[in-house]
Structures are given as C-alpha cells and as structure tokens.
Image: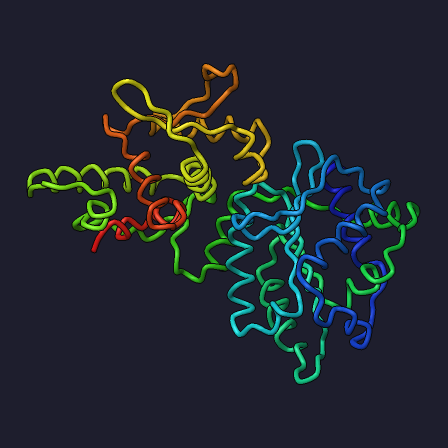
Length: 358
C-alpha cells in the first residue's frame, strides 16, 4: 500500500469508526463554523500518531477556494470542507457545495473530505432528505477524489475525540486500496459539478466569462485623468482589454496570486516610473502557499507579465510587478481599487473590467 493510500484509509477510519444516531447529531445544532474547524483539528491532533502529518492549517482567508482545513504530508496535501448547521439550512446548500468542490482542486490536493456537521433535525426542520440527496448525487459520480461523511457517520468521533487503536487502522488498511486520481477524472468531475455552465478543457483552467471595458470613464474620473481624447481612449481600451485576454489564460490560483500581490503591495517610485513590490511571506500567509508554490506562481505569471523576485535596497527579497506594454497599468489598478474601496480580485480574479466603466 502506498503512502497516500495509507493516509486516506487512516483518515477515513478516524472520521467514521462508529456511527451515531439522528439524536446524537443534535450536538451540531447551532455550532459555529469556526468552532467546528477547531473540533475537527482537535480530533486529528489526538490521532496524530496514526496520521503522521507534517502540518495542518485552518484556512482563514476569503480565498479558501472550497477548503477549510489543509493537511500536509510532505508534498502531499489533503483538504477538508466542513458544512455547518447554518450551511445546511440555506436553500442553495447543494449548489454551494458543488461549486466549492470544483474550486478545491486548485489547491493541488490529492483528496477532499466533505464533512457535513449539521443536526438531522432542528426545532423546525428535518434535513435528512436535503443531505441524502446531495450525498447520493456526489456518490453517483463515482469520484475517487472526494469522500462525503454524513452527520451520523462523523458525530461520535467529533463528540468523543478518542485515539483510534492502531490495530483498527492497520486492519482497515489491509482491506482498502485508493488509486491516484487522474486528470481525466478531475475534468469529468468539474464538468458534472458545474453542470455545463463552465467549459473545462484542462483541469487547471476554468474558462470563465470575461467582461471587457467599453469606455474607462470611471477609471478616468477616479484617477483624475483629464483631457482624454477619442484616440487616447481607443488606445487605452485596447491595452486594458489585451490585459484581460492575457488574464483569461490563467488559472484561479494564479489570478488570486496576482490580485493579492497588487492589493497588498507598496508602490515603489523610480526616477521615471513606478512599480509594485510585496514581501513573498505576505502572499504565503494570505493564500496558504509554500515558498516553492510562490516561486511556481512567479514563474507562471512571469511568462506574461513583468514580475520577478529580487532584493531591494533594504536587503530583503521582494516580488516586483512592473509595467505592462510599457505602461504602469497594475499601479493604476491598485490606485483605482484603493480609492473606491473595492478588492483587486473583483477586477482581476473575476475578469471584470466593466468596473472601469460608467
């Protein structure tokens, strides 16, 4: 049995060794999402001797992309998506879960666990049909990538938080095999989960709907650019929409990387132009990336944009973002977003250049 297989079986055993009842799941009633994350992590910490993970992270960024907890086994990563009582009460529960599953792949994880930590009944509703319908739909796809645990399966483990016997885990490991998930399966999964709303030709790339700028009038007004004639506007539109075309080729993680880099950067003024700079550590923390991941993203973005890592006069390594087509366009975008108090990702990650228009 390979190392990944052992981790998958160990985790599945720890999460579902004993099954509870509908009444047991009342424990989940009104538990906050953040509290549930702490409880899941506590269960893993108690069983760390059986798991042997090198790092566990609670994803607190708004850019969590469908993963609430990230577990590292060296280079191998496994993700966990936790659904609370509140999540299950929402009318778009199933649609939200499927969207988040499709986003989770961009963390580079080998396996995703969906843990539904909600009561089967509360004071006014029974959620068994809603939960079972989602579980049955996901199960029908036969994805090895994802394992779903219903409330009754996980309740006793989270409530009691006991160390599972190594003998039990070894016995389970001898009975199960987990195969590596192929790119073809990921592509099939994304297409099914997104129900044809997004075309998937490559599992690392979602072709999203881009929104081009048509006049840039809001950009001009906010940045106080005056005396813009028709010919200048035409050239500006061409440049901005060329940038949009280049952004469209990037995967969501690279778009988020660029967005965060612009949002949190400082403007460095040089004699005849400006560029952006940011410490790599800020992006590592924001997006839960390793230094190696950061270097990979710089390499990806560096194929299209003037972005590199180098030391500054302070003797510290910074990521520098320079001109695009000879223009300080990323500085303009940062200033525009700062002045009207919107996130850079609303423009860059969402490919929405209409926000520059009026």
